[in-house]
Length: 145
Image 1 (tube, rainbow, N blue to C red):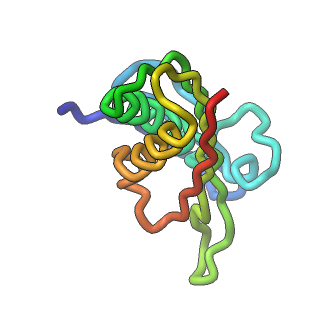
Image 2: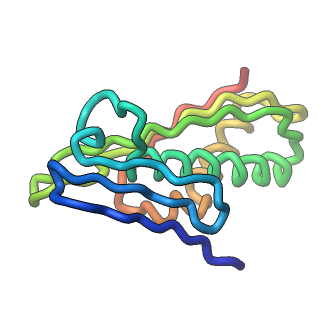
């Protein structure tokens, strides 16, 4: 399996500096990052590690869920997944990702609502990004459309 790479160039101090993160493997783009915007409610046109984790988690979960649904005899027609990643102060010092909420709404053939929730729980437990984030509280809200 391949290794994917991203690079970040940072200039200056945490509070006054800034940087750019480049999605090197895909060439999909270069995005601004900044601590003040990372810590603010509004991102102001910059991304953050938490947003990138959310992107990774939502896409990984969607792929894994489509596989689990098929293994259960269903056919995924459409899956809409969001991941909300929360950054909070860490009582031990610094900051930490304090929780992630995965929300999925799906249109699935040949699988009832209970089967969909079971598949979503299994996908949450087995998606590689969920596994990498062991130790972070991950909650799931799953329902059929």
